[in-house]
Image 1 (cartoon, one colour):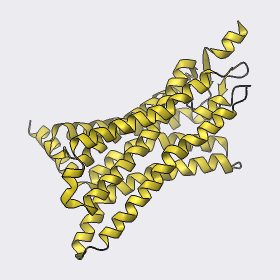
Image 2 (cartoon, one colour):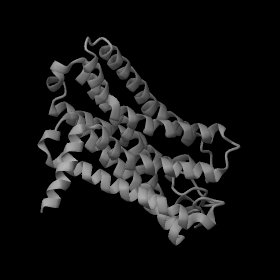
Image 3 (tube, one colour):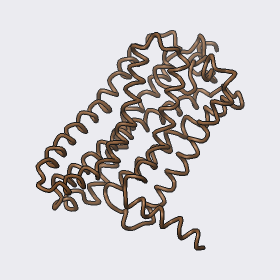
Length: 313
């Protein structure tokens, strides 16, 4: 019976942010505000893209997919964090832990792939403007979206089975606010070398390769932009990439910083690392709609029109 419970543990305990227990209520307030902003902002973005025919362009289809993934990312982590900080609900079922872990990693890989697709969109728009509509047809967009989801699902699903095969006979206390693959695997007394190697190879196969292709795309984009004869044309071309570059920096910079801090920042207090990890999954989903709303004139105009119509009614 004990062996059976090792392989099918009923639950884990998420300790929250250790060392900051007395501040949990106050820490939860900004996370709640950020989560509400993420939900409202991304739903408004999705509504505008769905209802406004002028926004039915490849870039905005990718943006709608990014907003949907951001909703999944923040919803998979922040509500459980708030219930932990405010209500003291630290327990999470084994199946709930696996589900949270899957959607956390899945949405991260999908976000990275969408940013690559958006970089390709900008590359085609600037380098082949006359062929833009013939290259990025609706069928091509659908194929790209399906391939992004299939790729992400295929590389993250094995994480679930790699964890399910492990026995958890010892401690079931996770020193974090959410379940992630290696953090849960380390609780097992069995050999987790397969988990470690797979957890190391997935970012290389997906995120690192996406970053390389994004860099290549922007090398071609910058080469094309600086060969334009008009200064105004150069500024217009660069401005169309401004929001995308901002989102790329917001997404990848904290991610790589967090990875490096966990690998090499042994002197950094654990509660600081956990707090930063939570900010990383909460802030980009809230800021992405703001960045695109401020930097993309089409969205800005439709947003103003939406609220002006509501006031007249």
